[in-house]
Amino acid sequence: MIDAYEDPGTPDLRGGGRYLWWLVCRQRGRSIAGALLGSGWMVLLAVSPYLLARAVDGGLEPGDFAVLAGWTAALFGVGVFNAWLSVMRHRTMTRVRLDANFRTVKLVVGHATRLGAALPRRVGAGEVVTIGVGDVQTIATALTVVGPGVGAVVAYLVVAGLLVAVSPLIAAVVLLGIPVIVVLVGPLLARLQGAEGEYRDRQGVLTARISDLAGGLRVLNGLGGKDLVADAFRRDSRRLLRQGYRVGAVTSWVQALGVGLPTVFLAVVTWLAARLAARGDITVGELVSVYGYVAVLVLPVGFWVECGYQISRGVVAARRVVRFLSLAPMADTGTLDAPAEPSALHDPVSGVRVRPGLLTALACARPADAVAVVDRLGRYLPSTATWGRVPLADIRLAQVRERILVADHEADLFGGSFRDLVGGRRDPADADIERAVRAAVAEDIVQGLPDGLDTVIDAQGRNLSGGQRQRVRLVRALLADPEVLLAVEPTSALDAHTEAGVARRLRDARAGRTTVVTTTSPLVLDHADTVHFLVDGKVAATGTHARLLATEPGYRALVARDADEPAGEGVGR
Image (cartoon, rainbow, N blue to C red; front, side, top):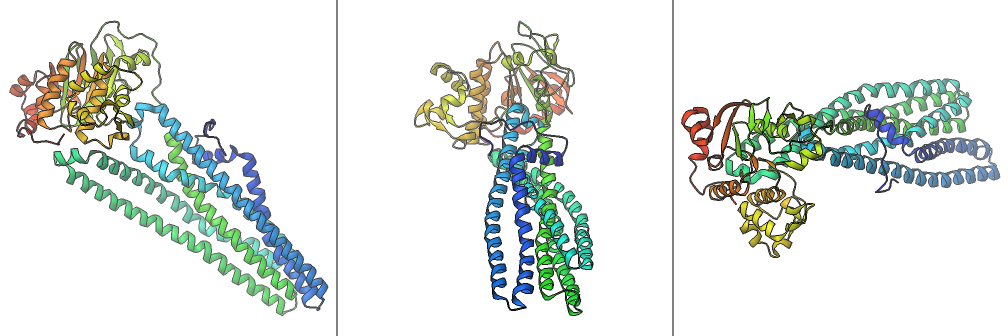
């Protein structure tokens, strides 16, 4: 089994099938052992009818008790040994599956760590959850083909050879009939793979919606958007249900044919053998052996169909893992130093220019447009943005991360004491924490904690309200005290009174430092030195909040919803 700290290796990302084969090769010895044990187990299942036939023809029919006892003892010994083989086969294959499961988990978690802050910008949360919850287990199950799958092929060849000794006609029927069964099921497996792939994609979308609902229910309630998101979730659920029925329909046919066709085939071969026995072409013992051989073949054929089904699903799941592992973090191609003095940030795509030392606000009807600007200025997306006169992409990434901080309003909150949560890798003094707490209007949060700064906060701040979590994130960003702070919707979950306090104190706390906030709240916009009004991701107008209200009807319509909202009414603290 792979060790918890062992390097999982470099996966083959050329396709889903290649990834599954890589998992097999990473545990070559165990896979070979599983194949040998599976082959021995199935071959001995086929040997039992041969021994039974010998007992009938050599002992039972002539009435020779000694011969009958000898073959019976051999049959018993083979059964006991085969039971042991079955236990070892199952144990070995369980280790194969667990290794594949754990190895894939390590790869996914490690790659998610390498992507870091770029992860939510490259792939949805639902996709990662679906991989961790379902795809990993599906991939592990697909490796069943290593043991019983290989054993089924070996058993098929052995039985065919034994049947040739009994009747070439029956052997020909078996040799041709079994592949026909597999061919009949093949198109269904291909159809299942397509339906399963679409189902997994829809499942990822729905999981993302569940995550959004769980994480932002208070905000949605406050903005009146709960019903809208719930309707979208309901529509996606119905689509997923319909797709699930499609997958279930194909699966039911695969499983029905996997059981039904071998049974019908068994009846046909048994009837043919009985006719040969009635004519005297084969003995009674050989008739019994033929029935036993074909009955044994039902198991390998069932395994083939099951393995085909599992491999089909495994390839779909592996493709999703490969797609995730193929995501590359933004390469650090920068070789230049950042500007020595505070300098302007410029995004040519939107036309946004951020002057140093000022509080700049980005207001637009589509929050995603403002987030895209922030991601380009924070160098989380490829862009032609500049810092000073230097292209941002040409500056060493370490310097960009050290001096420019993107504070996302949905950033993760790790479990631990309040002090560690807001301090991160630093060890800030209590006085510094208190200043940041006051700037974020979060004094009531600290005062309400039973152990003050040493109170343990749950992961993702689950023991805090939505507004409290948002202010804690702002405390953490202010405590970092970056040269440039790019804050995404830092007050969206706050009531009007708290929001006004945050806007006023944020300006004072960041005096002389460059700060950018994305918002449509007039309480925040009124404190900004410069407001960029974005339309379709482009700067439509620039000025102070008062000037834009007076001269830009589009801007006035955008922020009027917040301006008309009664004081004290909002999302909640």
